[in-house]
Image 1 (cartoon, helix red, strand yellow):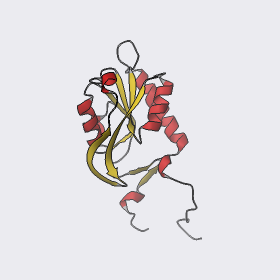
Image 2 (cartoon, helix red, strand yellow):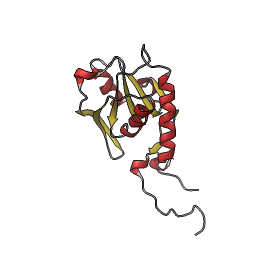
Image 3 (spheres, rainbow, N blue to C red):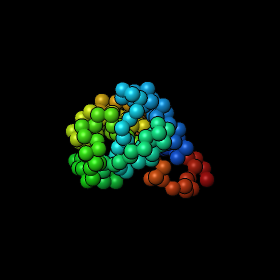
Image 4 (cartoon, rainbow, N blue to C red):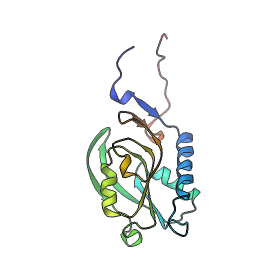
Length: 166
């Protein structure tokens, strides 16, 4: 067997799997909703958090949805996190009663920047890696730090050579 490149230790997530996992996240979040049982808003971390945030907002009947755009990756290389677009801060304030949703926490750099702006918000991700797990209040699945998650929006169906023979 040949050695694999780091990106080949992959966890491939289909649209169906993402939908199931985002619904599981919503089920967990309904039990930790603020007093009164209602979240004031969902803030999706773009771009990866948009699909899970949509599903969570639908499942929990949250009608106020906004985004925060934080750039911390250039393809598969992580760099310093930088806010490109903020949510309506008059709406979210310090984050009390606000739910922040992302697809994945990796090192936690992106969430550190987001938490600085909304320190009282509840942060939820579908997937979590060990280095960033402490930045998340609720998540569904933990994967190893050296696993690269291939999300459905990053993939296309194509033929793959078999491991043996042809």
